[in-house]
Image 1 (tube, one colour):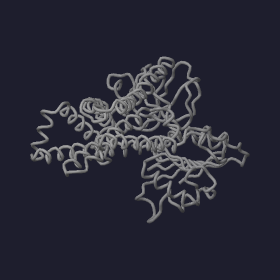
Image 2 (cartoon, rainbow, N blue to C red):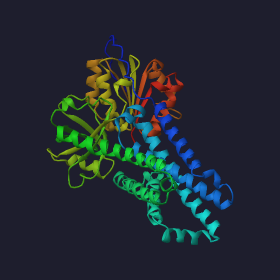
Image 3 (cartoon, one colour):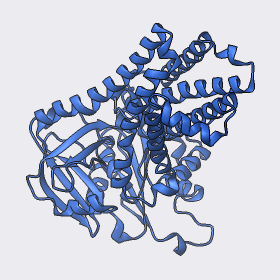
Image 4 (cartoon, rainbow, N blue to C red):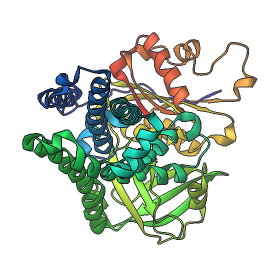
Length: 459
C-alpha cells in the first residue's frame, strides 16, 4: 500500500448544480400507462369474455402474454437505441440492468404465449399438445415465422445469462444479439396478420403501428443517422498507439473539429475500427484523459480478440465513433470533496474524472490492483497528486496475500484511509462485484446512496 505526498490544503470551488433533466419517474409512469392501455384494449376486445371454458381461459392468457411480451420486446430495442435522454436519465449501469431484466421478461412472456396458446387450442380441438403445435406451425398464417422469432429470442436470452456470457467472447455475444432485430421483425408480421388488436380494431392497430414506428425511429435516429453525421464531421482516425503495460494500450483518436465533440470526463464512446477484423464489431471504451479538443485517449486491456489486436493498429486507421454516452460525469458532483475508487482497468474513466474534478474539489483516489505491475497511469497519477493536491493511494496485492479477514476496500480500510468519506461524493469503476461491495460499504459509512455513482465495467 502506498500513500502519495499530499499538497497543502487549498480552497475548492463549490460544484455547479446539475442541470434539470427528465426524471426517471416520468419514464416509468409512461411505461406503466402503456401497459395499462394494452390490458384495457385486450379487455375491450373480449378478453374477459373468454373466462368460460378452460380452453378459452388458456387462449385468453396466451393473447395477453403475447401483447405484453411484444411491448417489452419493443422496450428492449428502445433501451438499445442509445437515445441520449435515456442515458442522461438512467445512466449506463441502470440501463444495462433494465435491458437485461426487460429482455428476460419479454422472453418468458413470449414463451408463455406459445405454451398457453398451443395448450388452449389443443384443449378446444381435442388434440394432444405436440400434434396441435405441429398443426399451428404448418397450417396457420405466419406461425412458422413467429416460431423462428421465438427461437431467436431464446438464443439472445440464453447468451445473456451471466454464466453463459462469461464463456463466450464479446464478439460472439454481440453478433447473436443482433438477431433481436430480426426476431422482432418476424414477430411483427405474425402480429399484423393474426393478432386480435390488428384484425378487429383500427385504433389498436394504429397504436401498435405507432409503437413500432417510434421504436425503429429511435434506432434509426440514434444508431444510424446521428453516428453518420458525427463521423462525417469529425473523421476520427488513429493518431498513436502507446503501450501502458504488458497487456494495456492507449489508442489516441484525432479528427476534425474535436473541440465541438461534446464529451465529458467519465463518459465512454462505442468504436469500431475500420480494419479487416474490426469494421463490423463495435466496442464500448471509456476515455482515460480529460477531452482537450485535439485527441481522445482510449485505454484498453487485452481481454478478447479485438482488444488484443489494438496494440497493432496502424496509425491513420479510420474509426467510427458513436456517443458520447454515460452520466458518470462531473455534473453528478454535489460535494466539494470526492472519493474515486478504481479496480484494475476500471481506472480509465476515473483517471479522466480525476483530472477535471481536481479543479473544483478535493479528490482522493483509491486504486486497487493485483500487483504494482498492473497499475496503469502511475506516473500520470503521481504528477496529478503533486501538482493538484490529489491524494492517490495504491492498494496492491492478491487477496490471498492479505491478513485473514482484511479487505483493502473493506469498511475498516476505507474509514482509515478516508476518515471524512461520509462527506464525499463517491465514484466507482471496476469489476461489478467490487463496485457492489464498495457501494454497500460506503453507504454503511454514512454516504447517502444518491451520492454513490458507478460505471458498470465488466458487463
